[in-house]
Length: 141
Image (cartoon, rainbow, N blue to C red):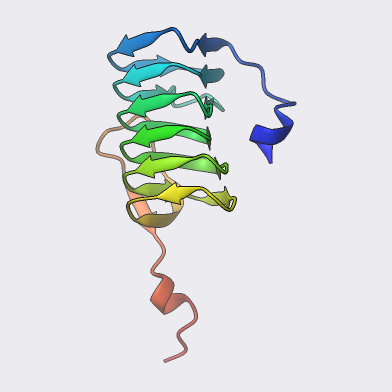
């Protein structure tokens, strides 16, 4: 898992545990959060951005990025167009939109899981998501 290996990511921006930010964050590259963010976190459309909320991190707002790693607390919806990882201390209070997801024992989601096959624009607030109807995927009738 990405969060445990920590290896291949470069964290362009780090929000330390002694930092509290109020307002939306727009970024590209890697964003690591140990502190508190009250606002939406949005990766640039063309980036292959990664957001990592550590076990000390707390976000109150939406997260919209291609790659998301959560091991802390998120109060808001999470939109991941490529890869989502929920580590053992992850606590998400909101709906989760994902294409590929890893979730370890201990992680919790208080909301709906919505598998998507396409995310047109990560930063578009009126984002169009094509959802997969799980009931009809295996239905032959």
